[in-house]
Length: 489
Image (cartoon, rainbow, N blue to C red; front, side, top):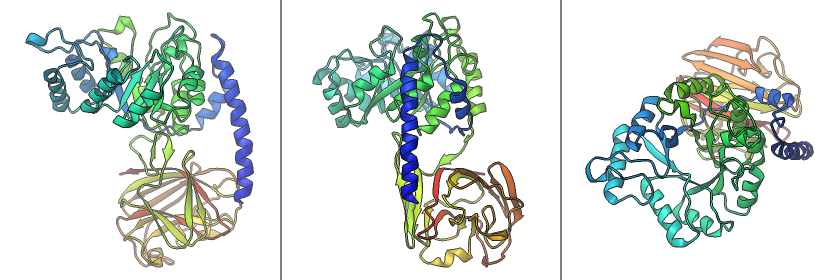
């Protein structure tokens, strides 16, 4: 079974490599190098996750830094990315002071005080450059660490990133290489990749979608090329493609294909910020209406709004943090794709947090219809024996069984109203809504169970809240799971 899937992965890898070559060729094109209909159609099937937002202060370049903080607060966004050179807006002797990494101790204190007062976080800083020596870069990184900055956005004039890499690791910071439009050194994504590929994962790309558009680069293609190395995104939408005169428009109204961008970032499991940046000069004195309109578009295409991803990740690498295993067998995790595979059993891979009322969504697939697994919910106590199977319900995965033991059933309690599962080898999607005593199960978009829970079958009683768990059933059932999201109600 695993061997067969391995062959499939090789085939898929070949297809992706071809796709990548086509994407690279596309980025070298002019105004005609736009996203193909088939590529956009594929993105339409992606359930877009919710990304944390930040605001690049350049958006409010006509205002002081202190005024900008008030504007960001008004937007309801909690994270900011500062840039060097913005007037601070302090009174008295500091009237001409500007925000940069050479600020005095008093100026730094004033900035921190205002950030704390407004409940804002300074998460990134750039675009900033320094000479390639330890004193200059060390001073920059020391400032970033003192301010709580996580990401330094740069366009280094030098090509040797070894010292940059060394200091990024020493200070525990991330470096994001930004792309201004042609003829900028880093205008094309393949150039950025060539500079960072030998560095540690702390050094990646700052993907500026607006400057890619001006350079005739399709943003989603560029993101695909830089997969796994994106550390920040300056999200922009422009009215034209391949034109230096193109200007910003609200998200969804331009040529960037914002939904495709968000879908690609979701596929990559990008865990950084969507940094909002709006540069249209005519709107510089009041960019808020256009930004708000764009944010509404992002909300409209985001599927997992208000959800938490319970298979965690960092820098596009998944991990099992927060998960435990009880019983025989185990689950393996592909840290790049986030695919969990069950082995042996019968055991339980369970998450550390208890949930009462919730919506749980996940994908699963089987190679054969006879593969057996399930999703347990409201497990009342930490599993230390098999007793949990009598006190928590299981949503079944087993295409070879019937009635209340088949895929879509609440195991041994309620049969699904229809068979909505897909053929083996294909990903299925479960949406499980648990509210009070009511359970609603949707399989691939069809409601197959709606039931007021009661003790039935093997279930003697059930709790009002409990843990979530995935079952590994037996040696012949290497069922796979991915995209685990939950929203508390």
